[in-house]
Amino acid sequence: MSTIKVDKIEKRSGSTLTLGGPGTAVTLASGATQTGFGRTGTVDWQTGSVKTSTFTAANGEGYFANTAGGAFNMNLPAGSAGAIVSVADYSGTFQTNNLTVVPNGSDKIGSVNENSKLSTEGQSVTFVFVDSTQGWINTMDSTSNVRGAAFICASVSGSGNTLATAPDCANVKIATFTGPGNFTVNSASSTADDNIVSYMIVAGGGGGAGASGCEGGGGGGAGGFREVVSPSAPYTGSPLNGYSTPANRATTSAQAYPIVVGGGGAGGAYRSDGVVGSVSSGLGITSAGGGKGSDDYGGGGPCGVGGSGGSGGGSGAQFTPTGGSGNTPPTSPAQGKNGGAGGGGAPFYGGGGGGGASVVGNAGRGTSNGYGGNGVSTNITASPVAYAGGGGGGSHPNGSPSCGGTGGGGNGSDGPGTSTAGGTNKGGGGGGKGGPGPSGAEGKAGGSGIVIIRYKFQ
Image (cartoon, rainbow, N blue to C red; front, side):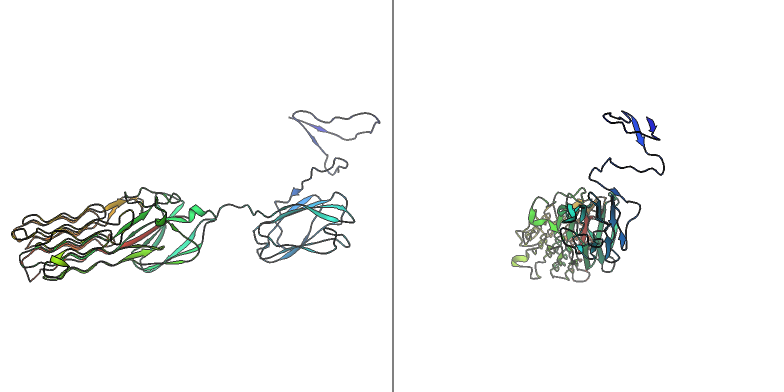
């Protein structure tokens, strides 16, 4: 590219002077001025000098005014036909701290010799001086406030609860609640879909039943499991992802959301039922506590049927045709499965396993107890973790221990053995105890629940 430097041009009537051409730049010498070329209707934006206090504008210039620290004035230059000045809201604060436009002397703004206030967030305007009658006329006025999308800004409270950037996505944060607290949205996203967060809510598991003589008690049902994988904060979820059902979606706004993490139900003593788990809730979504494991003598319903809940509790060994009902109250997808039936009477002394999030509890068979139903695995924390397994049932003294379901289900015991509790913050059901009794014949407690929230923060 070549450059042409012009020192002097003489005017000749009736002739045409052409400067430059393709690939040629025409420049004025240092200190030279130009007249007669006219303007293109735009200004030269002064990006290197953002205004933060009262200033006087110059013809042909545009300014960015930052009123975040307080209101101030822009003084217009003396008006001359064709003069042009522009200004834009730098910080999006004109609505709070106005910019006042002041005409010079007797000049007018839109036919009136008065100040004008710019008071709209994100506003930008262009003034052109037309004549002494109208003075400065606003030829362009943008109030669309086009800015980058804001994202959710949130915090957590409560002992042991955490907020951290997701290991699998630098734009996502994970709020983990292992106990009660608040998930506080300090500001919402300007993009509606980004306010739909991902979550997993697991309730406390039900307690396993105690032994009844030589018979086994039912295992506790897993706490209800509910999950939504939002496209704004994605990960590999479980088969129970409920995003396709709009009622399951949690759309957040700027407010505090109380989070409840349900505790596991206590295990039953000799000839006693376990205790139902407690609900977990947050963002307007509730998961039901796991159903209690039943003992034939403990008042678990007609013939010792396991208790209902997020997942159903297992039934006691004798006279029990069915296990407890899961998905109570009903959700879609189902938050848990039914508990297993007991063995059904002498000599079938095995207790039923508690239901899990994805598999029903196994029924007792002969002297053997039923296994707990499996839970489900999700990558909400960026690695696969299983939750909401059912507790195993207790067995006859000549039987064998039974495993709890994957996802924190406690193991059921044979007569001499000891059952185990449901997994902490897994929502697993407690294991049922096998006979004999009464010493050491207790079922075990269900595991506490957990609440996890994922959201896009940048």
